[in-house]
Length: 229
Length: 327
Image (cartoon, rainbow over all chains, first blue to last red; front, side):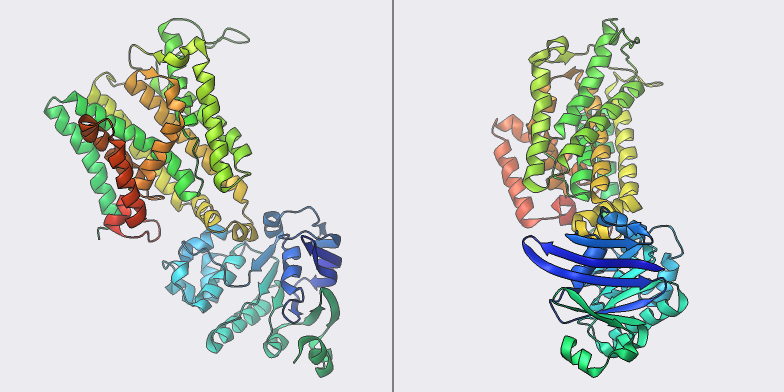
């Protein structure tokens, strides 16, 4: 049974239609890569999943529940954890406070997050604004985990980071997949790394989900046609 | 730079030392001034929860200050005149007991803050400022046209209300009581700021959308903060009414709300002891400069301008540096 199911989703920003026909399903414990070129609707799809944008038609179900009228904070409480694009921490809170502010009861605690990202323990009393880009990203992932989600969404989690930090983030995602039953949606441009962690890929092109399948079926003609690589 | 916690301790000791010195020197007026500082600081600490922690610039907190004041005035008036406040459907009589009056003042102010917050927190920025101002002025004009409790002339209470074990008519004992309340509220405020609720409220001030993505309802957080903030300001109103033994519609005036904001800006927005420093400085300036010229507020305006331009963390920030965490 799917944990998340999007059927024929269309969405608008004011009068402009951004999504036309998105179909996406994520099973429990599954890692799905959401791919596509810039401006094709990946982040908009994530906004719909997190209820930050309401669909104009179509249906969205999460854990068997219709999410049509659910506001974004209730979606997060229902188990959808988002690591937003651009490492968005709470800049004027320190690392510990960022994590405490988001904490909800469950198996993810401060200790478990700092076990995943030991650097956060070293920086516990440091203001988020003074962290490096990589550390802020780790904090953003840690903060999302502290909400104890059943679906974690990582929107461009490694964008703009140094190779060594990117490697750390990918290793953490792989560890999350191996050690937890967490379903994950990863938005990223790095096909090589996605291939290493994701079970399946969904490609979005001009607001439509145009391809879905395993990475073994993701041939060069598809990546060239939809991703330009 | 002085660590903020040492500076806070020094401020608290100074606020205690001045009236003690005045008591030894037999200067009851100075004790009354210090009591006034402590009460206004209390009102400022209340507003600072909404403004400093939650980013809610309320220009209507005088409404809660006035409600607290009138809660005291009305209850004490009925106790003094031996007339019941209400006879049906059940009998409610007045009281001269401070703890009971405080409880009523806190509950009434909290209830009003909840109702006002429920409507006004749906707006932001200048609209929020205007709506809170409008609510404050509604109470102001209502009390002016309410002859049962003095209308525009206000309501005098002949004897200060009582507190078990204390002679509240003795200025130093009443100061001690107010100082204790202020200390307790400061501890409560510091604890609240460090709690998950306080952190979430601060996070909501920084970015509302981000707090929603971690499952927090920014509106509910702000409503709760606004309600607590109103309740504390209401308590300060009840104490001020007891200090003056008089309540009048001016307690509801927008000038009062403006003064609370001035205390916070002078002392430091979001700084725990900001309103204490701001209220202290305000009363000192009013006392010293007010004796020299009736236009003393011009100097206050210049000082406020200097603080806004050159010391964004207020006077606390000027001495202890920019805020780091929640020291």
